[in-house]
Length: 562
Image (cartoon, rainbow, N blue to C red; front, side):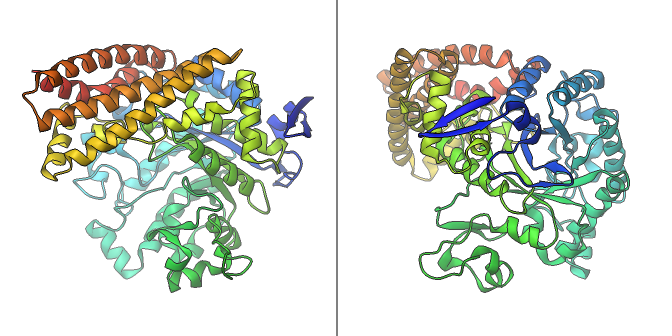
């Protein structure tokens, strides 16, 4: 029996029961004879984790009460259907089956994820598959009206099933297909029917063979909410994973897919007509905010099984550290929503395209267990619980220090380093080209001021982590990851600042000397960061991650120092 004392309240739960059932006070509902899904999403599109590390983390996730793992494997298995996309360090099928067996032994149900319309960059960047593209100039989306696409995906689906064995669910991706209906064939179909029907018909086509095998298909919810007109034509056997990474109660706005973030006064008549009863379940009188998770209730009312999906790593994070409290608040409200009513659970996603490790995401990863054990406890209580568990102390300044690293700055996030989901090499001149753009826009001084602000915050965070490490009786390994993130962020802010100054006054010898100091520190940090990643991520991908994080900045500093 595991006992948790939180803010004077006593909650108890059998850990084995939580691991398998995931239930506690207020969370007893089940469906199909099983408990609600309490899931974690493992994304290996970018961070291609080592097998031993995955087994270690699976044990941790099981101990935290998770009962489901969504495996977004992408090119990290030696696929026969698409050998051209396979990573140099990919698992053999037998190696990955061992990892799945370890998870199953821990009570973790595996759900494979294979992208079937969007986010297929790792496939379409290969010359052999260019004929499957929606648009010739893009590599992110299959053409749903291409007669070769569905047979290709069905063949691959069967190969995935051969690796995963007996599964109850199969995730077909289907998010962010923003080129939908753009090619001539798809455009003609959409004009005759609709974009909505184009999407639904494709998802039915790739879903039906799974349904016939007794496997429930899953798709992300954003595209059907972009184009809900033909929603009734989508099979109700399809489960919806409704992802919302920036929503929480009290935010004052909601995501209206296809229209952006909207406050209560910005909601148009069409949105209110379709979603009003779910946006305002208690009425829209003044002072009542719209429900940020209204889409889950809407989809459930249309006959679908729905799972809520927050994130511990998403757009807006830097490559070195997350928006810690932002993700915690999103995760907290999302899991409480997913564990309630008729919804089927919640899954915490972690998108490794943002590069920072799971060790900096533990604050969100451990929240579902806390919520299941004490569904009425607040985030303040969780922070107290977390520092006692991890550091043996009641001092919550750990979260204040993490917050100092939360704001991203110039050249410390993926987009500003020339790195994107297609995982192509970042151009070495990318930072220099961005500086050219900033200068042309007349924004050098503005960006310099931002760099100064971020630098001050990052330095405060680093000092706070150092003081905290001296005060705590345990948890030093976790704090070392945070201190490394802080030092990388400080160095990157210093690098951005000196490069901006160099553009303003390129002949200043003091600036040249500062450039050399910062470059030397960057090179040392690169070695230290690579050593930390190499214990978790496979060699070829560790090398690529370092290239994405450091190469274009290193090139810019070397040029500025000449």
